[in-house]
Length: 173
Image 1: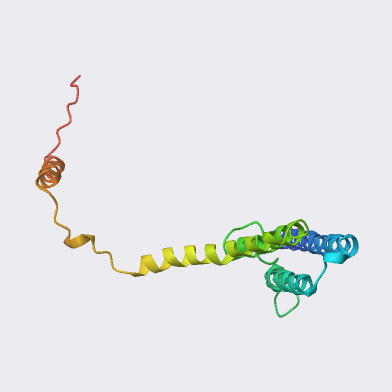
Image 2 (image 1 turned 120 degrees about the horizontal axis):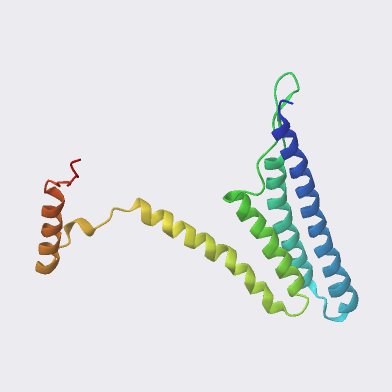
């Protein structure tokens, strides 16, 4: 009965990675069949570069997720960790987002090449996240700000009220 959770997570991760792989293969097959097969007259070298780009955008996050999903074993061969929980957020969620955005871009680019601009969402979100991180590292300049008379009086009143001794009335029986 020991390590039941690790075994269960290992099975979940294996199932999840298999579904993710099937999604990637399905998107590539659909893209090749429709774009290179049906619309073969408009299939140019740019589309081959796009296919290579999306393949790279699939491989890198998938390999990272695959390494995160692998279980850990002790020296005697017993599994003590079933791998990273794929349902959690953080870097795992971001890697899934990259794969899903790549699926969308690849399939939508069959309709119009303008959908390639959707890839700009990834660096834009990274910049947004980094700006919040950088703002947290910078000193806050609000300490030297002068407060107006009304705000100062209100703050002093609240401080005075908070410092007063509070009496609680009880009933005597």
